[in-house]
Amino acid sequence: MNPSLESLRATAERVARNAGAVLRSSKSEVLQVDSAEQHDIKLELDRRIQEQIRKEIHQVYPQDAFLGEEGGESASPGQYEWVVDPIDGTVNLFYGIPHYAVSVACRLDGQSLAGAIYDPNRDELFSVHRGGGATCNHKKIRVSERAKLDEAILALGFSKGKKTIDKCLELYQFYGGRVRKLRAMGSAALDLAYVASGRLDAYIEQGVSIWDVAAGALMVQEAGGVVHMHPGEQSGKIHLIASSGRIPLDSV
Image (cartoon, rainbow, N blue to C red; front, side):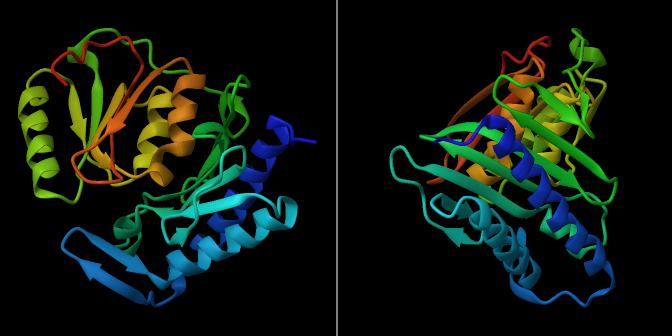
């Protein structure tokens, strides 16, 4: 028997909260760096939290596939797949910036069915299942009602490749004089949750990974918004535009 969407959502919520508790306790730790690149940092904590999430999910759904930022395998056709970013915003965490989240989603044949994004610093749990709406701390959320571009707040995500960074800078120049404010906050999952909850009007990213957006994209859609995804410049990356659907983004 296939699990209900509600049970998948409940599992995503639980494991995301548990992972967030570890993140809160890690603030007193000396963080171990596995690797550091020009635009990214990988921590031992990423691997540890992802393994915790994997074990908790497989206690309930041992037959499901598991794919995370720190490794895993994609699902076979017809197999449920859990897609996880244990720390979305690792650089923020490492530098002491309290803006990062755990993202957990369950997909089937490439379609997100349920998910949760947990912000341990604000104790905000965003969650969703297909056809069941999106919530923040179990209160229903909706995308922004703003319809004028000059009243909008947009988040633009900087990717790691030169071409995608250059494109993002072009978008900054284009939108800088047209919107109320631009933001680059460093967590794709939270940017999507903020679009879903009406805090942001749109989020644009040139090269994001599926584990960053599998939960958040569904949240935006279930909150009444619009999401467009297609292959990005880099292999395996996604060009994503998520918005309320009410403001003009024709130039993108």
